[in-house]
Length: 139
Image 1 (cartoon, helix red, strand yellow):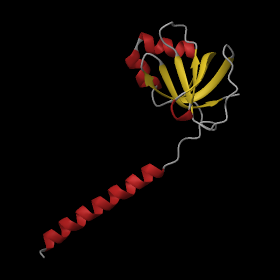
Image 2 (image 1 turned 60 degrees about the horizontal axis):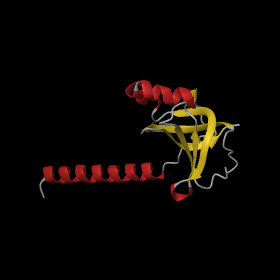
Image 3 (image 1 turned 120 degrees about the horizontal axis):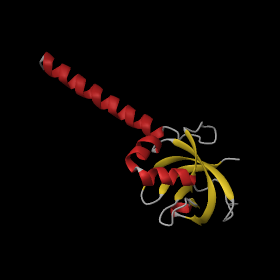
């Protein structure tokens, strides 16, 4: 076998192994512990929804994939897909709201409609409602 063929095969094998190891690392990476995480922004549900309604592009650049502490009044609490708890916060708009999803098994079931609450979660975007995922209750 010629030398350049051995070098090319060696480079291909090295790249393949590096890709496999990177994939394993990313797959096994732990989720952020939002209880201990410092929020990027502290905002009310009304102000958050208003920011997305007024200029969605700017609000997306500012808030999406950031950790937010959102406070507001609970409008609705229901169990969503795969046992996750969805807490809907009043946003001042009849058409949209802020939906905070708590992971299944977090043990948080004591939410009362009409009460004030503060939740920390990662903003995932705006689809008629502002969506926050992996939320935890902040006391």
